[in-house]
Image (cartoon, rainbow, N blue to C red; front, side, top):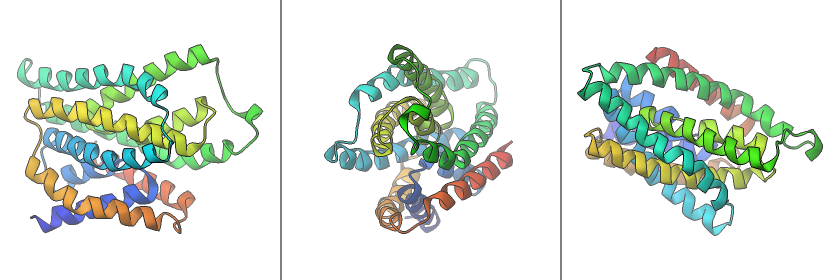
Length: 258
C-alpha cells in the first residue's frame, strides 16, 4: 500500500462525501501535478475510481428513490457514445497521428477545470434561485428538454472520455435549471448516470492501456471510508462556503495545467 496515494484518496473521498463534487475535478489534477502521473493514466485510473465510488452512492439513492431513470437514460443516449468517441479521439492522436496525446489531454483538462470551477462557484446562486416560486425558474417545453438533455450528455460524455471530468460538476447545475425536481433527485440521477458513464469510459481506457490498477486500489482504500466520513460531516459543514472554496481550488488546478 502506498501511504501517500491512499491519503490522497482519503482526502478526495472526504471532499466527495462533504460536497458531492466529483473526484475527477479534484483527483485527476492531483495525480498529474502532485504525483507526476502520466495524464492518460491519471484519466483512466480516475474513471475506475469514480465508477467504484459512484456505485455506493447509486445504491443509497436507489434505496431513497431519488433517481430518475428516464432522465438518466436520455443523458446516457448522448454521453455513452460520446465518451467512447473521446477515448477514440485521444487514442487516434497517439497511435495514428503520433501527436503527444498527454499534452492535448492536459490542455483540455485545464480548460474543463476552469469551466467546472466556475460552475461550482455559481452553483449556490443557482440553488438559491431554485428555492424561488416555480414561475420565476427557467424551463423550456418538454420536447426541447429531451433534446437538450441528450446534447448535454454528449458534451459531458466526450469531456469525461478525454479528461474524466464533467459529470457532477457540469450536469447538476444544468439540470437544476431545466427540470422541476428536488435537488436530491437531480443529484441522485447524476450519480447513477455517472456510474454508468464512468464504467463504460473506464473500460474503454482499460482497453487502451490507460489504467493503473495498483494506483486505483490504493486510492479506493482511502476514499471509501473518506466518502462515509464526509457524508457525516456534510450535516454540519456550511455547503455555501465549501463549494465556492473548492471551485477556487479547481480553477487554480486548471491554471496549473495550462
